[in-house]
Image: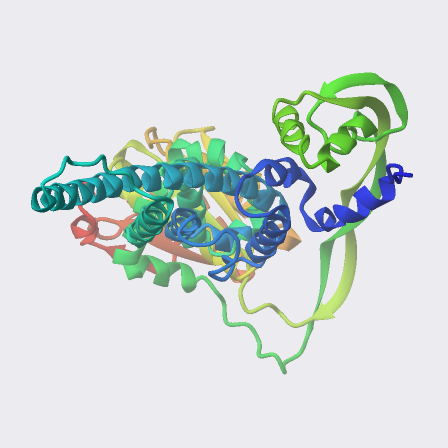
Length: 508
């Protein structure tokens, strides 16, 4: 008597699918490249390699030359390094990689078929000439020329070798889909270093921050800084010489941020949790298909029909509903006042004051933005806080902390994107700065004041700055242009004066 259907045998037969990432299982099942076992093993190797920040070793499924265009595209874009420890990014990228393999398989087969027809035509002509010469010698009619299977197989192998030996370009669709993102992430890494890791790889970097108008000038400002090392020297000089590490400690009362994590539970309706069966529907989901469909998959002749139905999402499957409990951790931050003894830090926070008056338009504007950018980069690299004041006329003060979080980067780019203009109110902005210097977190800050100096310094303002300087605050001035002694010299010491910035980078 014939043995009955055993569901366990089918499960054991396809147990190797468990190592395949779930979201790419449909593409792996339907992809016509190699056996199913080879595809699963190859996809797992690609997935693990990308999570490690590299491409898999050559020879991993699929074989060359099928993988060459995809590897070349990923290598040219330098995309693998951004995939390190980014599972969501790898999930999205793997779907496009498998799609690219399918496109390359179709293209490669088409090229081989075209070349095979060319070789067959050459072979028929050669055989026809030989047959005609033989017929003349034997004084008989010319027979029709037919290529046998051995010749066709030999020509097919030759066509495959020729196509495989051709230089293959990077996959154009992969480059079009991921090229702009890879370029943007590379620019972030070049400008901010590890800031790219801190921001993550969300698509908002392409549609939000990276599309900001301020980002368009960011690389030009970085080039300006590279051409003017004086700018970097100014920012890096914004430290103070405190007591040595083996000197006496200072008791300071500070506000320390205390972060705690709270767990939150959310119920999310989802069809992926089979809590309740609500009927039957047409679907392409393998996990929910009816047993009758599984029988077709195990049948030697009906499996092709199963694949066709699967590709058309026409499999009979259970329709299920359920509720998934999603746990998330929410960070809550409080500030606790504590008093402790600790050595003075070698470098304190940075406060940048930027003159945005009408006289700063043009080259002075670019230099001021470059100073702010370099201050933000230095503060981020040295774990220092950085605050920006951009002012013009009375009541016109833009102020925010350059914390280089995703929101902070957006504020920085907003500053880099607007153009200067307006009057002068140095008393108003310095009053705000002096008020901030009274806070414990900013008491030892270094102030850098960027201006052309075309304003007078009232006596009361100079006296207030002197009092702040006596408590340890240093005021660095950056004067743009050669205007001699200005109001900037009255409130800042030292004052850095540069006269040849117009020769750098072609700024007008």
